[in-house]
Image 1 (cartoon, helix red, strand yellow):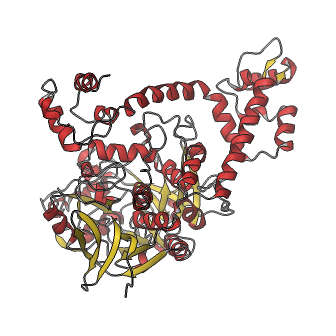
Image 2 (spheres, rainbow, N blue to C red):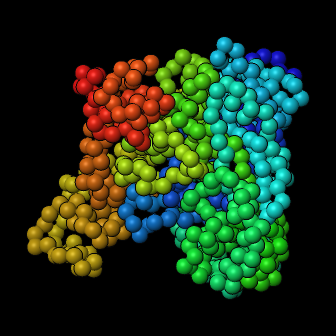
Image 3 (cartoon, rainbow, N blue to C red):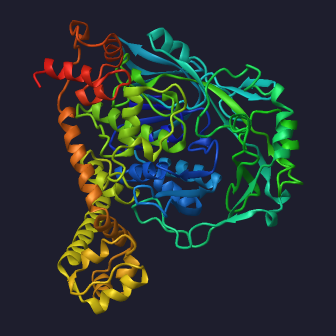
Length: 622
């Protein structure tokens, strides 16, 4: 069936697996994607949405590097919102509601149209390893497929166990069986594993809901999009709605707590802190009488609805009774109940920054197998694993993004350096350089890097360079052009800003807090410049951010430059920490386990103090 060796074999067809396969294949590796069900490639297992706080930035970064998630999102979107617009641009985060069926279909079609990408449907239950190096996979039918590198993206399928009340059964997702064999083999190789939990809400029939009792949640009036390519923006959008739980709903849910696997000891693993189940919210926030529920359509034409905020593993009868007491849900009909799922993961401190394992050469982990949660986090790891697998096979330098270059860099560095004992989710607060890592400039930051490694195409690079040139020219226009008091004062007066008495450079007025690009466009010379140079919304947004936040951007760049000095101080690969007696015992233990590559990475390890770093620097002659 398989006549020759593959370069890269990707196990699992979720968000991580799809991006890994696309990246490796597009860079020129002969790639095989093996998944248990070819109909669920790119499946949205939980909510039908992409992006959100920090997650939207990650999707933009994936797109800027040449990945597919942004394009697929735009092609299947039914609503778009830019979150946090009332805050500074470092916090702006794009989010799209998607058609679940079309999203998976677009992923399948894009991969089928990707040269070098083959497919095979079956369970992989073992790895072929020779002399400490992976050399293929073995399927449940006993078929051996040879490959020079393997990327594991098993999601929630590794020994997955589904919980609904007191009922539990094996499964990686509702209606799909769990994957077995891989965990046990990895443990034999010396890997450490753990268990994590996640959950999902019930899906209901939208025809049984009374939307007139709910609060309308429309998309943006002028919607944007995710991809920097020529994908189309939405012409029409589907509305979402919001309602709330109540004290009555909480009391009805509490009636089933004695049968809840979360409270009766059946679930022993830790779930996502920032996406708790409804029973967990009631228990942890006992002072609150209500919680928000977002009612999200699953697509353009389907009547299926996702009840965001009602994730639960309570018995199905308790779920149904409680949900019928929510405003607008009085006559609700279930498509399927919510459930929790436990699955195996492998602490990511066992990986290198390339996502290659330290114990087995050419074996990569990406997605929930590393202890993360979320489509976007998984997709970004898949992309990086696919890239690095290809680069290593072709004897090229590793591709590693620094913390000041991308949220993807923050994500991977956090995982490798700190590990995680609960499902890891990205937030803007995790990034110390978030003013640099905005959603609007992901292409400027990363497209040249994507082009350099052979993933982003020339047309994508050309679009990015044109945007940068136009933005720089517009900034120079504001810096060099003067404006008279009679022209600028009406604008300043309209925003309650102090008036000027003499002409000055436009950039000074533009830099004031309440003055926006829309205000500046009222000036004839500005609007003429925009029209003459055919400046689009992206260029206007980029220019405004650069002008108004130049001080913050410069400060963060300076801080990042200081950190890079420590990034340049490499630690020898087999360095013996035991000979440094001045290190604390905890530091020696952590450094020995994680084996940081640089002093900067060592400084981010929990338990390694500044004095420990000083000892290392002295020893390294710094």
